[in-house]
Image (tube, rainbow, N blue to C red; front, side, top):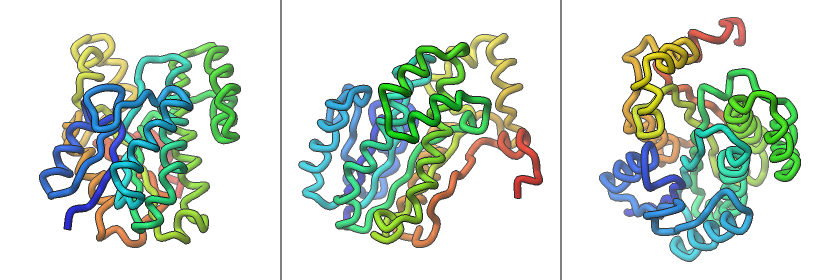
Length: 254
């Protein structure tokens, strides 16, 4: 039986690869993106996010088997706050009733960057649901490159805060995240082709297991998280990063 899965960021990169994998296994994909999608919406604005939710609900008929949030911005700047964090959280919360109706499953795209230094002010404002304050903190950041890891850390923290609640676990909705390392997409192509940036990137994200990943590698991990077989995993960040996280973080975390 075909399952209905909504997917943000469906037009390119990890999102396009994941959409193709979903269709190969017979799922009905409701793609959401700023262009070339079933639901065209700008996730950088509250109005665009509400339009995305309405568009998905119209197409799924109020019952959604899965939601995968891939949409995100890599270019450093305040818009990362709106797309990466609020574009994820608002869609998950807005589609929660449809997910609950089908006991659907949620998979978010985080990042190994979520473990790296960030701005506590941006993270705190995001977790408080104050987009204006988060944007203000991002605009004031002394190092704009801290905005991206801040948004990804906030996404992971929010996910863990809601995973065991009545609205999610109590409604039969597992919610997890995949945190990629460096993925071979158009977004990373410019960095990889520049020897200096590649050196910096390899120091920041060492990937001793098989190096950079294809987008399908991330897509397959996302597919398992929303598969019927996932009955008990929730609130987890799964690092699909070639060993970067285990190389960078202390082993006594556990």
